[in-house]
Image (cartoon, rainbow over the protein chains, first blue to last red):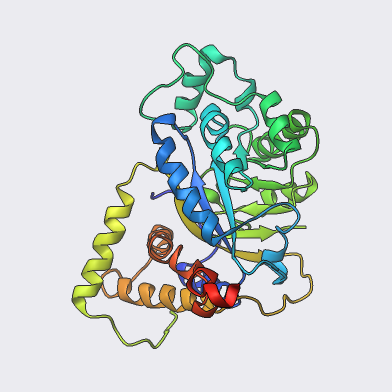
Length: 235
Length: 115
């Protein structure tokens, strides 16, 4: 850690979190990144347990986290898979679907188009951490847009994880913001086939860290911002 | 500074919680599933949400406040990383337990009623 930015003081953040939790306004998420096959049984056992306790969060019930209209007696669960790695499709997707959950794939929009030969180099340069053991030697390690479209049509969710796995700061210049937000939105729309409404920065900066970025996110059509501690409805 | 007015935790328990936070931080995040709680916040100025939930949110709020107070006895100025570690430890400990149904609603415990 050591890279998390807050828009205000730690006390203000703590107070906001205590208020939100007290009101029952929360999402239960499980964050994944790479999901290598040598951990398949571990993931499967976890989702077997989750299926006994949780209901899937889908696009249809996602908003209920904000308005308190969640209807299922079980709380909702949102499995979030960061980075768009190929093993999310090969290993995790069958497990999610076996137990009736929808995956939420947070993809840096430039990553799927990187040619396979340099995907590992791109990942290393952009803090996209591949698993300890390379399970696809000589092959691609990123999901393809064809795979992403297929997942989306099966009801799984997608979020834009910036364009290049970018870490927002208060001083990020506008031309960089434009690329990381607008270009990324266009690439996600082109890749998935429809607009993506969720955005998330590397290291999870929230609204207020950079107000110019917040305005641009809304301009680009993003409605939700996922951060380290919150999911914020922007529009 | 926020004063949550909770009775202090015993020193031993503070030590244990800090050790647990340290243990969790050593995990291989790049290939494991990490449960977390995210607070939902509406910045659109929309209608006030109605009260929701089974009380688990209030339990978590109290536990977070208690954890923050305990951590402040060792590090008076908490930063964002401290908050992240607190919530990570909360989720690790309570993600499953606070999702369990009420005793009377756990149908596997009351087969006759369910039938």
